[in-house]
Image (tube, rainbow over all chains, first blue to last red; front, side, top):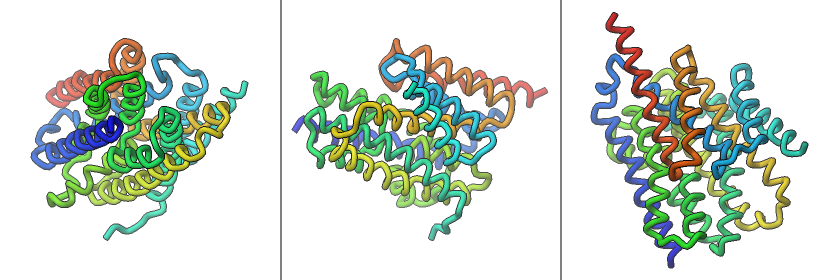
Length: 98
Length: 223
């Protein structure tokens, strides 16, 4: 029962958070961005932060995850998304095997 | 009707595979923590937000009350509201917004924002969002059923692919020195904060870094 309560509760709050963002954008997201580019910059900051949290799970830097992120980031300047992810995954796997 | 495009499918396949790997880890951990396979899969279908599912799972495993676990997961998910906002007004009707909301994720928003026009952004968002959702659900099922049999070394390799996805998403969004400086600043802020604040807060703190970046641009435009 505890698990089902958690699943139902988090599903409801997550949907409301997502819907709130979509609705706010519909009601004037463009106006909020005039002259600053703030809305266009948000995904850069958010994705960079998510990438950072991925390489330090539980607060400890994991070398193989850092290697995967760096290799994928560098590869994505030359390759498309999927090959870049594969290069990153392979680099991380190599470091984890050493 | 959404027309499929090869570039969208490549993006979606990469994101879907990354999500499947990440969700397999969630599925395996959920079953290890005493959840049933049905509960693990249901969580991925109705929540569809990886970081929050893992944080909630850990909180419940540590003995937290369901409400506390929901609050921790919601904090992690606050960034999804910001992503929905950054996508802009892609869906004109309320029905479209309700359907689209569940597909807002780091990957679907990140890939859509690399597109130039609203029509392209909408198409990429829907294609990547749907394939990601499918990969996420199937990955959870596979992890929940077979995860316990995977050696730790294989799990370490799979984690690498999940970490690579976000780096490969952010780099194509960097078009100049300002975006590069912002990405580095956000990365460092999150890295520094992650050991000291609850999960979800590092990403929100990093989001605040857009304010100085935007003000610098406004000043340069005003000149």
